[in-house]
Image (cartoon, rainbow, N blue to C red):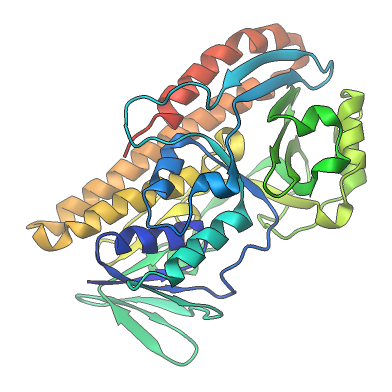
Length: 389
């Protein structure tokens, strides 16, 4: 069996390594180099981190990631500590192979995955190879490059929110503007107020919130500011944001927040429009083309599950592809795969909506928010973090 992977990000490289574990040959095609230029951090909860740790890696997550003990939740206006949630201090249950909760720079994770893939005999990496088209054939699928067509048993689109694979094999995605944007930045840890440099902090306020967490291996602080804006913004990792505009969003908040915003280098501040995907979430075209990660769904960031969901896709798709040759009714098997991922996506979407309502509670309902936060975290931990493929 041979699989072509379109996109060399976290999901594409992880899929190639997961299939290599099963002695399945893959070729990964990436339009750029196998490096990350977005300058962002990611959160890997246990439902995603244990999948990474099971890959044939040239290293471990603990070498590149920070395993925080607790998440501190604060009122963004008064700077009052509301509660603290345990992330790694409790022994994980349910699965003996379960690892912990990690914060990691996206660039470091992609470097680890690509280095591991280059050393694996079952994986071939092709950088600076833009895929022009994906074609479904009777008993195979192919990709078209600028000068050649490559054929294989399967094609898997891992090419992100603007997926060419999705547009080639499925209907055009239908997205709705949420009215929110995320300002994202990695800044030097030594330059930020000390209260943000010690541990992950979730700062809450009416209609907006902030997530910050230190990446000690890089000596950086990752910051994400979710705010409402009336003007529609691009769904892009590379759109620059305006620091003064960001400062205005938090002018009534604690002075600590203003101090944090003031030290952010504007040339590294990015603005990402948040959209809800109204199209039918499809993972399989009914034959030999699959989608995983952002290529098949837009995940809002309120539960920080974008990377973990993509890794869940990787684990489940690998399991189903391994059973392909032994399956009498392949259509039934892959419809089952698609249905399972749709149910999981809907589950996470409902949790995202609940977290958004809780985090952005109006000031007059602040006491209700403060009371419900511990209950909400129990639900997130049970439904999201403790999920096992």
